[in-house]
Image 1: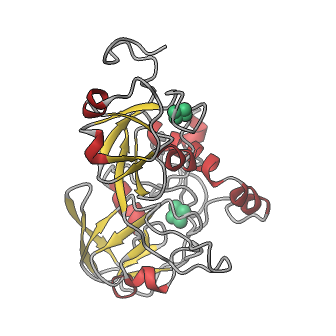
Image 2: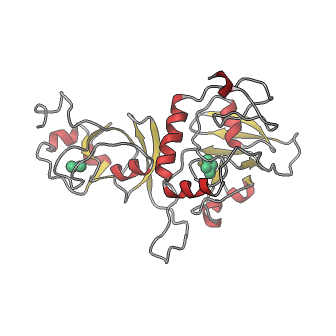
Image 3: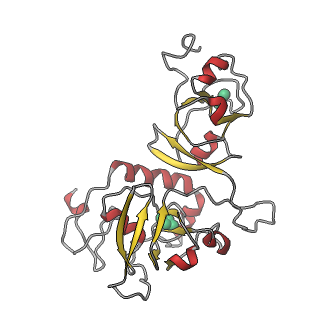
Length: 291
Ligand code: FES
Ligand code: FES
């Protein structure tokens, strides 16, 4: 176990995927949420990652090419979700800079491929961030211009604010001969409480599918809005937060909707909210436990 935590290799990295300053130093144990995220990310990535793995895209962590910026150039970077501003050197990547603060920032491949580390800066990404690698298809020129960048391969070029957790904010337009046009749809920030994960969900994607795409094991059965197995609860009035395409579940009446109960299989977000899944068998279900 200790051996796995030891810093090794000339670049100084750990078998748990984290970097460390010096060979021989001990590495931090991977936090539960990070480990969970890697597993979930792997599930969500599916075939692409299997193929990438076969092709050796990931392999051992490799040192990323640093941009040609003097080490003395430092920039003030505000991590909005973490509500803090730190100094980041021009040759220090944004993901590692945040991790050095102890922040649990999203990532999976760390090689510019999967998009899990997608973040948004408050300006043109071309001018503010130098990305050494960008193999994430939806992140095209237009999206970068809109401020989307990868933190795992991104190095600061200026001072800026940064919002992490943007995976899902960029979508591929499948109607255009599979060409990627970087269309940006209205999305909402949904905190999946039991899964301990916050993601961006487009308005045209159900809460169930959005979670499944991230590898969450959410309950369901019919997927058509009548069985109630996917019952969840949001932190507000469902009628204001969620568009229920179909609601044929007899127990989900107006009072229950007002209490925040919803169906994830037929629920499409219309605002930001927290969502607790697995409410089907809940004892305090309004009116008594559903059958
Ligand atoms: S972690 Fe995969 S692209 Fe950054
Ligand atoms: S899975 Fe049956 S109502 Fe959602």
